[in-house]
Length: 230
Image 1 (cartoon, rainbow, N blue to C red):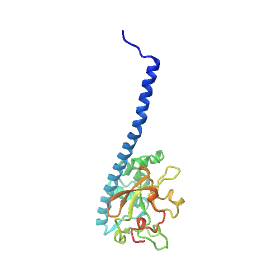
Image 2 (image 1 turned 90 degrees about the vertical axis):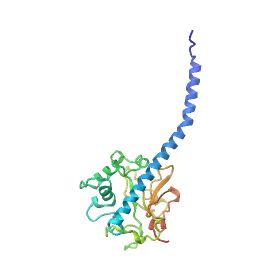
Image 3 (image 1 turned 60 degrees about the horizontal axis):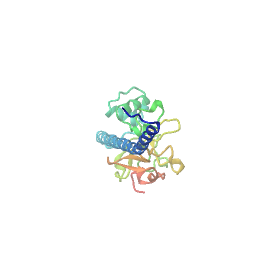
Image 4 (image 1 turned 180 degrees about the vertical axis):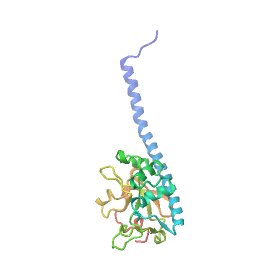
């Protein structure tokens, strides 16, 4: 005669399964997070290759943060059009969403987005490259709409070019980043530390490395932001 499980025995089995699941879940989450971080590194390395191609094609400059031809000529839609096969639709936001679907996206960073931006490209360009600008501040001179000559960065292995885009409370991302000028200013300006409290950085020389959020200086005169000696 087949033995029937008692209620107590069933509860014991369920409890054992629950304990095993709770032990395995952190390991699975860590593996998933590591896979996302590794994929992000690959995306940034590819993007670094495209920046080098752009620099070679356009006489040693990288695309301007804000182009003179409207939103579609800003750095992100511009790169998406040239190297990710995104059609110039006349709308920069549409091109950014299309670029994300074409692979220019960090999956971990997408988790902060609202529904409209969840599959969009979500990387940001450093707006402090080159140090002090014509207006006397350490940020991009939006009035000039100028492309940055890479040769101005005397320490390309220490100056960051691209990282995880910051987000605001609405789930909108910004395609530029900076230190923020103060501890409080880092929030919403500095890269998003979405990989176990670390952010991946693409440097001007093409290599990729990660930093914890607390290793990201808010002082915009630091070489990480300017690419030149302090």
